[in-house]
Length: 484
Picture 1 (spheres, rainbow, N blue to C red):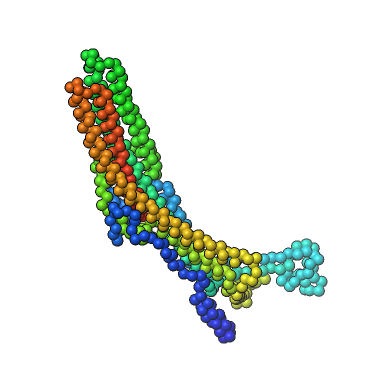
Picture 2 (cartoon, rainbow, N blue to C red):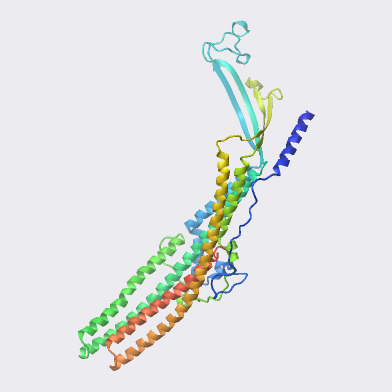
């Protein structure tokens, strides 16, 4: 018995010493060659950028915040991402449980074997034939052997080469990847809702412009009709002025259609049925101040969910290389069983006479498996190389997106300043044309042209204002904002 204990202790010590080994290299972040600053001389660079601002502070419109709140609870894509997180968490728990022995219980079992006349019997059957004290066995299906048992078995694979630890690393990395996927969905969702809401405000502003222009055209038409009655103009003047009025009138149902569709789209993003959308601000009330810091490109590795996801995928791929390598090395497993076994039911629980037990320890080394294990190892290394390339590409795409958004913000500000001057000039032209027309120094064509230019310039101004707001949202998203 002492010798058995010594062997057991020696085996455990051997297992612990081998457990300190771990194949495969630990993960190290590859060099991403990020620039020191983004390609834009018009942005502030600081240690903290707008991506670090929580979305509730980034947006100021209360109605927009309510829409986002609803979407974070009811949006189906976001709910799916949360389910993926829960699934990945279950795999993490399974990877942790792999370090412990597996235990199985055969609670109760009965094994009866029945034979016929031409098969020999044994004492447990109760039939001894002509030479024994019992009666002769029946011709068919007599009880040959019986067993009644309850067994508890356990098996344990010793993590010699760190295979289980690498599997745990991969499972945790994949779990964190689902977390980043959820952040990416939330970031895109918030940006989509903000873009849709700003587009809705733009359509409202254009509707106001269209109605105001329609009233102006209607006033002009009445003046032309009076001049026609006085014989000062021909019917052509009435027709062209009315045509210009109809152009402005046609904008209204078109804008009403776009408003309804945009409202339905926003409702769908929030997981609700089509309905109207409450506005808390007008387009003119929203600021487009672009004096903000974008941080440094290195922050993309921390803030951008897709960049973080790509790096976690690389970590998981790196761990899988260690797993594939460990499969090529010897594996040590220990199994033990204990239970009770009896040939007759009345002796089933007659302890200790019915006790059984066993202990097996095995070291298995794969020798030839048709190159399966080596192929798995080589493929795992190639998959790791692919994951590293995908990380580099994701970082590159993210840097390009931020640079493009910065340029867009800068150029839209310049366009807005020009558009404001254009609106001011066209409104003055309309005012002067009307005065000259009433005084007889301008024709109706000059009035119509001035009103048409004013309409187009005001519509363009609202469109550029909306693009400015969307560009700021795009920059916020590109920097990795919106998930905090």
